[in-house]
Image 1 (cartoon, rainbow, N blue to C red):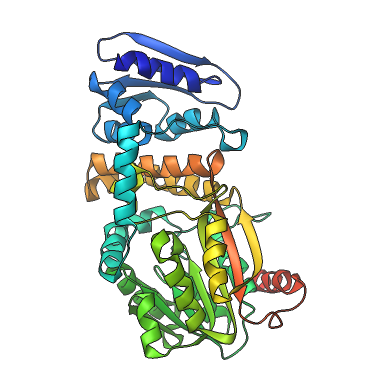
Image 2: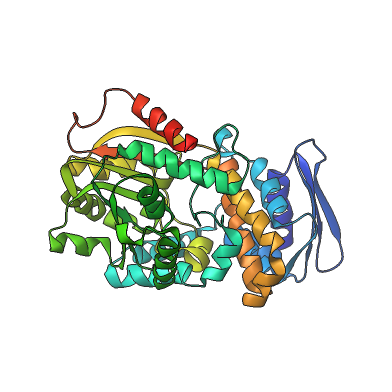
Length: 415
């Protein structure tokens, strides 16, 4: 029965491109037809339970079968398999590759609601789950210039990952409208790339905060190597603790951190930022977002990648921020930039496969590449994008037009 449902499931999805499936009993089924721009993939299912697991929860079932070596890809790779499925059902045209069955949806919803409450202890544990798995992995995957684990900016003429990440840093810096002598808070500073860039190019003092011990130590090393350690303070601290100190900042920047806040904490996040931001301050929030309305984090991502994480819709983000009189002075959607970034990370991981397997094992490598492939498909054909939202507390604090942003970017590019 599960095999029949599995065949019906694939037949309802795949039209362009081909998928050949060899089942555990040796039988072979083919789906779709060859089409330009769509991959041809062949897989083998090692046991009879794989079709059932995928039908019950397509994303988690396929992921765990692939991770455990029960779903073996014999032509193409995991990127091509996920691309084949998702490109046949693009979000833009109302497509979907299926949701879990009712019982699984109920279990997932309960788990999501429980894990979404990120108090200070749970937040640090969740961040550690993803970022404290070892800096060596991220050194192999990310750009060596800035070690940016967030969406790059692929402007015209930008070719390499490092160039795209530098362009992203300049793009964000231009929206901060920085002036000499200002103080900047970097919430979720990662390995220090944003803080180091700002300290290098502007006469500012930066306070970078993270909940990852691994990130903290490397950020300090990188700042020292860049010769800007005297202008940056890195600290292991929860953003919510800063208000107790009475701290205020001229500028706040947060890149790739809001996805870890969790929906129940949106109000707390923006209230804290409003309290930390000077009366004439400016804030720039860079986050993955949903193109459509609010949703729920899938079971695979919650279990293996970002426990407690949630990708926000633009509507709920602005609804939360506007309660605290943070003026959304500029909003930009980056539609395909992250897909290209993820493909570069995936290529780096494939290039360094043997090293990553030695660090961890084959199962980890398959889990990690499934994550990158799934994320890529979400930005190319699913419902994900990136948002950059500029906030201010005084409508008169910024120039009337956006020309200052472009001028700043051009100046940074010429240095």
